[in-house]
Amino acid sequence: MKKRHEQKLIILSFGLIILFSAPIILLFNSEKEVFGFPMIYIYIFGMWIFSIVISFVILKKYDE
Image 1 (cartoon, rainbow, N blue to C red):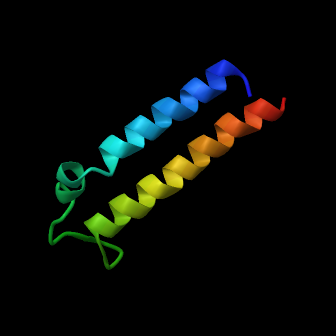
Image 2: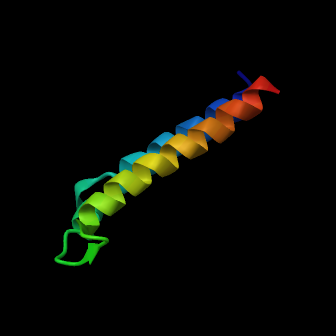
């Protein structure tokens, strides 16, 4: 794996640590709902899907 791809994955990991920290998650702990789901669930699963997509894009470029 190229060094720049490793660096991108490390930056992604640090970003996810910040996004999944308790103070940030608790910002979305409200009574509001989107399509019947609480905002905290939408945030957690949205960030999870986002991290999977970004990781896939970074690792897909590694194959080239």
